Length: 241
Length: 211
Image (cartoon, helix red, strand yellow):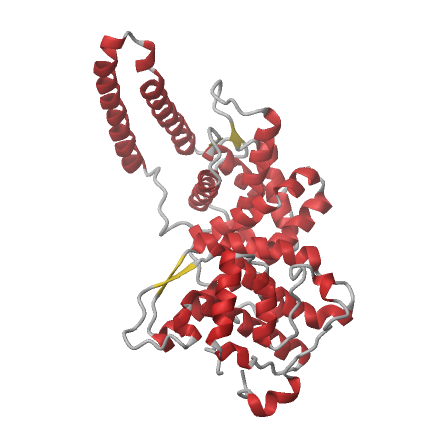
């Protein structure tokens, strides 16, 4: 198991690669959309062709990197992290890595589903949150589900797992804080929501958690990080999903 | 008229009254109702789950905003909440019916308006399950359920004029005195028919048992 604060270098490398992919994709998109208009008219068509080719090349590189490095989302293996199950008591390197990946994908899928632009997730920080859980300073497993959701929600916010890519976001800070809170709430809800009684896939379940959360986004904002209102919101959301 | 029954999910062991406020339960019940009606009529439906999620959350918001505090209102609120659900289903139209069978009898509401029929039957079934569990009352539907003229009026009014009228029509189908003025406001029903059933006296003879 990695020591607290020092996640697996492999996970850190994944974050770095994702950052590069993000920069490549965003850069290519911006250049294709905006570049030709800044050139003299006679160069526009040629440059647009060239830049479209560059964008396709970026997509190809991105696709290869995704497959080779195992960065791709796989709905067949997507599910709640093992720390959400009370019977799991031992955290190994393998479970830590798997849990960090599940938490990462839950956060990124929620961002995508909510159509929030330019909000990145760190898998290394996901791993840090889970490692802290294993180190013992985490709420005990006999707490009610709303309290567990609340603890995870606050941990996601405090660890700054979600953040802007440097220098590119045009979102106002207050709006961004609201985005972060909404994504963290929906994901914490999905982690602990009851399973087994219904036939939905995990992706369906995550979308439901996101919808229920978005309906209460004003209340989540008003609650801030005060435990009792947040727990009450989770208790209601857990009964609604 | 015998309603097309639906086997409601029981996995969470909660009473229907509580389960109906759960998105996953509602979605699965709607899909099961679709399957049951398809098996009976031969009409195949496609269902949009995105619409189901959106309409359910709108319904829940309306439900919570008007939920009464007095025990005296609980019974009629079950009727009202079921009507609210019908309104949201008709507004969102999450189901689309495929082609009708060749020999479809257009005087049968299930063929006259397949989507509307699906929504009404679903809401009546949920209402009946709550009445049975919480109040030990067997609920029956009114003869209007069989009348294609009523269904024609229902479709015309809610599609072309005001979806809120679905609440009044739901009461009509359920055998409750409808409120046509401000049908979407629960307090507007007070004093007119707290839990009344227009057809209570006739249920043993005129209507099918066990619906």
